[in-house]
Image (cartoon, rainbow, N blue to C red; front, side, top):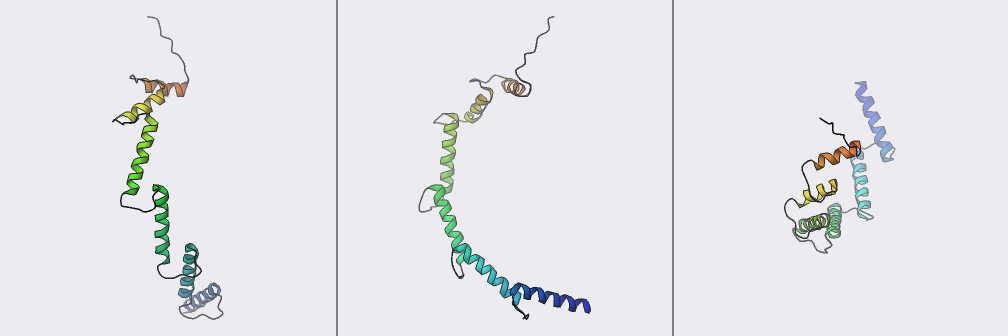
Length: 145
């Protein structure tokens, strides 16, 4: 009925505004969207005009560039990212613990030592440190019995 005709006319008017055309023709919206997407992809790729495969090639180029920056290698080989992550992890652990050969528990020992300010951990050190942080360095007087 009337609603369908009104919506059809309204839709055609909006498509004409979008495309800049005075008369609507079937497919105008699809052609406009296709052109805009291709234009955006061309700009993303640094090209004047889009050609098939540009987006795939550009993403591949950018990914390889990011991997090369991360690993410091020109040519990627399988496992480079994992090896770089492991190398960086090992360097961080060595720097944090001050030990060149890591043994299980070294991270925890170093963290606890840094947190408590003590070289050797004794039961209750963490609780005492948290208490000091929350309530200050108050001494509790012992009651005489």
